Image 1 (tube, rainbow, N blue to C red):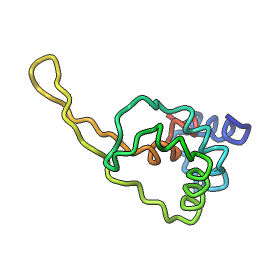
Image 2: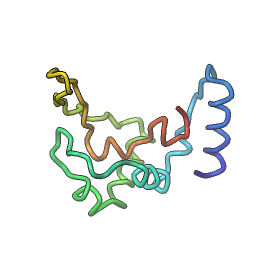
Image 3: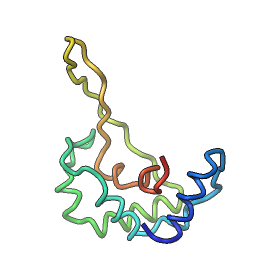
Image 4: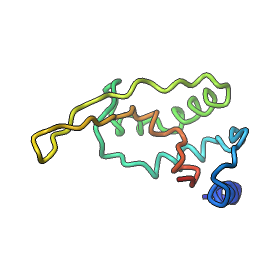
Length: 114
């Protein structure tokens, strides 16, 4: 995590009511690649059917496009694929599976905020 992110994460941890007006200046291709490295890439594919291996083949170009769309406020995450996972008691629970590029976008975990 770079120094700016560390400071933001520290502020968020010390003051949970603090609201950040913009973190767009942190959305760089390098940051999105780092976010991609942090995610679990062994999961199932989302509603678009694209696997993480397929997304990774052209990662640099995809990240550049994604970064531009995020900064232009044109990014809209696709729907999440819902599946029912069986539980031990015979019931099921819902599970949401995002698309690969949705996984690449920053989350609270990527910013070091929980």
